[in-house]
Every structure is written in structure tokens, then in C-alpha cells.
Image: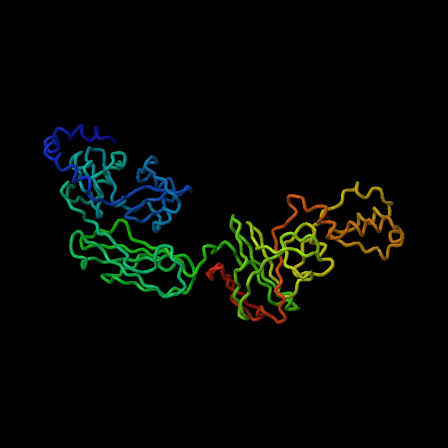
Length: 473
């Protein structure tokens, strides 16, 4: 509906009023009215934003039932969408949202306020309140008649909606270690004293609905679980008007910015030999994360994640250590006992050979590259057959094969080719040579992973919790 459409039947009557009221336009443009919008983020979900709270519109039938307009949907960043508290879904039996502009088949346009329809008697009053013509919803006359009639809207009305302020408590984005927190809040009441205001609060992960706090200006919490929380508070005055923009604070309970990104995926605490006990950490985020210096808290003490060899050229070589950086999907296996080669290292295509020399727990992947047939086609058929029977990463044992053991050319080839060092030299240039797994060894002489169960806490370099993992026998 356009401004011209409403004025066809009413404009001639309202013209004197418009002329008389021109002087009030500047003041009227500042009149505060409730915000109602259709909003969405990057996903397909569309919400009704009513009085600062969003409600999901679950299907097209509900959307069409209210005659909402697709062109009125406003798109925001997901972070903005998520800053609004989400309440129950919008249903067909709900009333039209507070702040809606509606009309039936006639020319009259109404504002929905406190569940009543308030007639907007002229285009000047409409535009003086900063309303947009495109936001008017056409509804059935029967539905319009069912809505109680309130007072006509005017230009001379003062602000009716209270404002809420959080005075103290966790600051926006603050990370807390203590479990006991207190919020203090107050408000401005345009229709009376602050003491006439009542307050409602909502804490995500704690409350399922708004909590009426009456005229109490303080709310205490004792949060035993780590996590991300958002606290909301809104004021309401005696006349029934809510603050359309609830005040809120988002905060974390003892959580790192890496919380949920690096996970404790597995703990094996009951191996036959305690030195074979291990735990596995994995990066579940699409970013490279340096975890060297992070700590793992267990009953028996604290484990600090060390550096490791990034490019293990040979098992006995002197190699430089580097910080452990985990890419998306990479993992680190931390074992309690000694490293069979005396080093912490990143695995690669050839490290399966090391598992043949000293058994690792868990075993190293045995996916060594296969030789091309052309590389050994010059050897005798008995030697070729022996090579083709070898498993991946298998170090040849030809002691019980007479034909091979007396063939110096064959044994020389086997000794030269089928070992870790030569495999590394031949294939380290491959783009996929290095694997996304690191092996760390703590060299502990006592059992550090409690067989009776434990809660393991992973913390970053700042001592903030990244993940927790509990296990029981």
C-alpha cells in the first residue's frame, strides 16, 4: 500500500490537520516506537524480531498466514542475529507482533501496541512516527475486528518504553574463572519513577523462560559448568511497556578462545603396561593452531605439551624440534612411556618402518609407498617374487629363503631399499608425504593415567580451559 492509496478517502478530510501540524514534524520524527522486523542471517531461517526477541518462523504456511512480505526481510551478520535472545517459534495462533502496522480492506491503518490496535489518523501522523508504507500488513477484516481498539495514535505522545542498563557484572566477552557472579541493573522509566519498574532476566543454558525479578535490581548465579553464556535483562513499567531492546552481556566461564576447537578425543588408561597408556587430541577447526606449551591437568600432575621433530630424516639423526602446529583434522597422540627412537616426531608415509623395529602403541600407520615394478625388474624372478610378497613397510627377513639369501644382488637391493632412511630420501618431496599426526612421549616411570577414572582438563598458554574429558573404568 502507498501513501497515495490511504489518502484517496481520507486525505481531503485530513489536509487541514496536516497543514496545522507541519510545525511538529521535526519533534515527531524522534518519537520512539517498538521495533518489529523480519530478520535473517546467512542461513535460510527467517525470524520475527519483536521487542528485541527473535522467534523462528518455522514454515512458509505461517509466513503467508500473517501476510508477511519477503521484501521486508532484513539480512544481518550471524553474530548480530545470535545477539538476540531466541524464544519459542512463531505459530499461526499467535497475535500480530507488537509494533506491527496493519490494515483491512478499508483505508485505516493501525499500530499494534499492548495487544490493541491504535488507529493512525493521518499520513502526517504515520510519517511523523517514522513509519514506512511498505511495512503495512494487509489482514482479513474479521481478524482486524477481533483486535481490541485502543486510543488513536498522535504526534504529541512522549516516549513510553523504558530503557534497561546493566550497572555491573561480567563485561562483554570477559572470560571468568570464578563460578559465582552477580549482575546489577537499573532502568529509565519515561512514565514514572525508576522504582515503579519491574525487571525480567534470562541466562542462556540456565533459564528456559524469562525470570520475573520484580523490583529487585540484582541477580546472583553460581555456574558450575564452563561454557559461553549470555545474560539478558529487560525493564517493564506499570503501564505494560517493555524495553524493546533488552540489555545483554555475553561472557565465558573459564574458557579459552580455542574452546571446542581442540578436543580430547580419546583416553586409554588401562593398557597392560602403563607405559603404553595414551591420550589423543584432535583439531576440529579449519585453522592451524599451535599447541606447544599447552597443559593437560590430570590427577597425578600437569603435562606440558613439548616441541617435536617436524621432519624426521632418519631414526638416529640429530633433528631440530619445532612447535607442534595442528591443522584441521590433525591429531597428537601423547604416550606415557619412552620414545623407541628417543624423539617426539611428526609421522609420514615411511614411519611404518619404525613400527617394525619397535612396536608403538597405538601402532604407526603402515602405508609406505610401493616400489614400481621397473625398479626391481632387473633382479632374478625369485627376488622379484619375494619383493611382491612383502607387506607395506615390512623390513625384509630373508634368513629362511635360501634362493634370496645367496643372491648378493637381491639382498643388497633389499637392504638398501626397504628401510626408513631410504624411504624418506626417495619420497619426502611428495606433496602428501607428511601426515597429520604427531607422536609425543612423556618418558614417565610411574602410572600417570589413573585406572580408576579421572577428569582431564586441557588448557592453553594462558591457563584457560580448551576442553575437558572424563573417563571411568
